[in-house]
Length: 253
Length: 265
Ligand SMILES: Nc1ncnc2c1ncn2[C@@H]1O[C@H](COP(=O)(O)OP(=O)(O)OP(=O)(O)O)[C@@H](O)[C@H]1O
Ligand SMILES: [Mg+2]
Figure 1: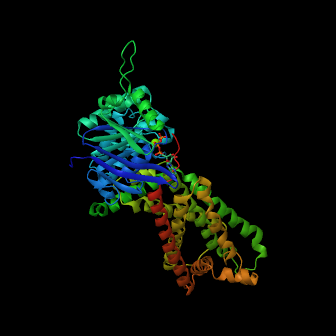
Figure 2 (figure 1 turned 135 degrees about the vertical axis):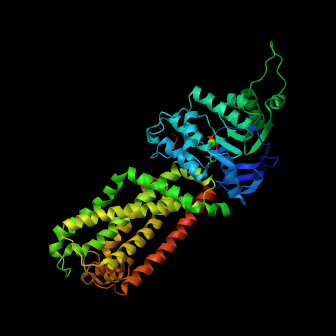
Figure 3 (figure 1 turned 120 degrees about the vertical axis):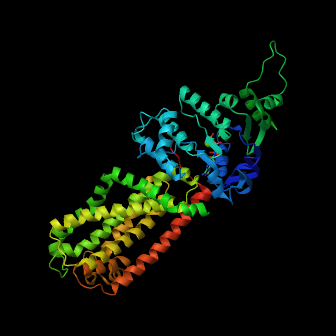
């Protein structure tokens, strides 16, 4: 395994006149959980689509598991799994059939067994033989995540994995993500919930106006935050305050 | 990559299995696809039939090849709809991010369309038999008919793949079929071309549907296939290659642009 899981250099992407990514640089070490934050429309999904070979960048390079996303797309696809921002499940199949299908496409030896384990893990055993068209939004999301965990790709992309889940579902996803990282997988996720990044991620990167404007551990980001104003009680800034302050600073200059 | 090729048939099998499940879980779509052609067949045989000088005693025999073509043209729009849904729901993106030979994503749908149309044509033949359709074609003629109809289906399905991948709305994905359904009417399918005004006749006699209809009509009558079968085959193969080329372009464009219109679930 290469000693860098994801390496992105000077990545640019525009949709016609709209410049979404304007020189994105970052590095992710293997086994880390990295959270990508950014306001709506910042380009988080665009970045994830480029890293998962769905979209071609205009310029710059991105290596995933040591492979170039443009010239070595097939190898990259062997190294990753993707959960997109919106649940991508087959409505006409049952939950179990969806999982078996993915397991077969990943050429696993025992697709049925893999499916049943994942159904149990995500609390879908009871609904396993119902068609997905009859699932609730949260159940679809769980199935969607379960489908991404079929097989053992070393790098996992999760685009807003907990949006639309109930609190219990969120905690379950957090647990799964932590277990995956302990097992040595690299997880690159986006989220709208700052507490999620704070709880889950070893590293946080903030994407704003087409660039990564800050990245590091939560502690490092806290240092970037201007020294606490002299108040009656000194107060540790929350990630939310850091996030808003950094974005505010950049917009001012 | 070698591994992709190694698993090509296994992946294709999974994709086809998925599409066939869709098919057998929505049998109503097949029934719907046969209603218009069967309605037309009733209309032509029992309403217009008496007024049309087809030169054959059995008018059901005469219209059946054209009815086949109408049925196939409307049946292939099912493929557009399924592909459009795959793109819109993000399933296509999920598959594309996995190590699967990309062509299997499309071939699974295309092969399922052959099954879809085989069932719908079978239903139409059964109804035609009830209406008095009789054929003296031998086994070889029937094999030739089935082969030609399969090739026509393949061709029209690859055309249907293009709107399935490029349409911006579900309606847009389906309307492409209308001109194709209309085409047999300006051919030798329902009335002899010699009854048509000069310009229309020139078009009718030189468009693919006429060659296909005449070939099938001759084969159904137990006559040996005339040289028109070669014209029919040439049309089909030529259009098939073109459609395949444009469908691949549409697929590639999706890859570099990915204008998916997701629905929140
Ligand atoms: N296919 C597309 N064609 C044109 N513009 C697009 C396309 N996809 C995204 N955009 C635009 O690019 C910008 C970035 O979109 P993206 O989906 O990457 O943002 P995001 O950070 O994921 O936002 P969110 O938090 O809302 O999910 C947005 O302004 C969006 O409108
Ligand atoms: Mg997004």
